[in-house]
Image (cartoon, rainbow, N blue to C red; front, side, top):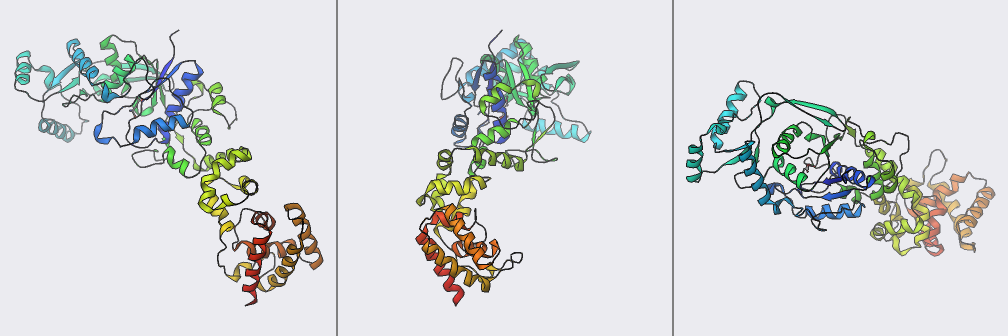
Length: 482
Ligand code: GLU
């Protein structure tokens, strides 16, 4: 059997969006699972839409997520160049070949004529397709036009009768009447190929055996198959992937600025969690396993698990999964990933291990860290009303004596560690005849200045250290005494 060769063929028109990354992941998984090769090709023939820096983002994201490619622009390979704008000669040569084969023709129609034709067919309530006007030009007319230097495009000559059928490995048999297929442009006036020509030429010349791409290409694939047949080339296997939706109605789309991989990383999602979640957008392992490493995905992946129904990108589910991944990190691993956020809020000046213990089990996204740890470096001025807690039946007035007693106890405490501190405070609660919350609630407010902290009074007081805790208590007691 031929070696499996798959490719990811993004256009560098923005940052790598979720749908694109999913295509890359499935193409990578299929290649790795079958001992094949995974190829990266940059489709940059739409110069107007190219975004500076987008190519580098593609390279970096694939490397960062572990989707290594065997051939590609920055790694080389035997079938390059892997950037379409560097393959211009090939497209021109193949377009000319199609003319010679009768599968394409030069079209000299002006913009004005095309606009008129379109308006007329729309007025008749029809979907516009080009009327093959230039297919009927005589050899002499063509020579005359060329001699006069008239600009032209090369169009595909699609038969008008019959149907074209192919079998997609996910969507099954797809049949399209040829009359519905437009004689689209293959090579533009400036010599740039369109997707229609470039995808066929490149997939063939690069030996791609399985074309894995979004379902938006499902219905135009018959056109590409006409080109394969005209050239006498083998048609690759097609695997079209279901659309990714933002909700029941709307597609997730990079043109509408929907989140890219980098946006999610910026929001504090782990790359492993993203890849894991994306893998399940349109593919299912056939059992209820949800957490997969990339290796496990490679083992489990199969085309049978792909679905044709649209997949909904569920941010809550992703967030849940991310929390699982954060919890599963080793303490060192967590500290490593969290460090940029620790630095943002000054938490890096504390005992990292303690902070990790405090916060790692309570995070859904790394980007929540600064807000949760702000109390470490700054105690905000706060309103005495914060001491009020209805259910615990406590308020500022009740807090003052309790805080004074707590301060005295903490001052005396020699074994300043979480468990001994908890025990000592529990003893005080009993001695004063209070409920736990009537001591721990005001204490936590007095130490942190906020009602939302990642842990209880002791867990937050401990990393602050004895001296700082007492200093804060003094300040808060002073406020209450005023
Ligand atoms: N450049 C196309 C895109 O970004 C690739 C489609 C394909 O994989 O063939 O949509």
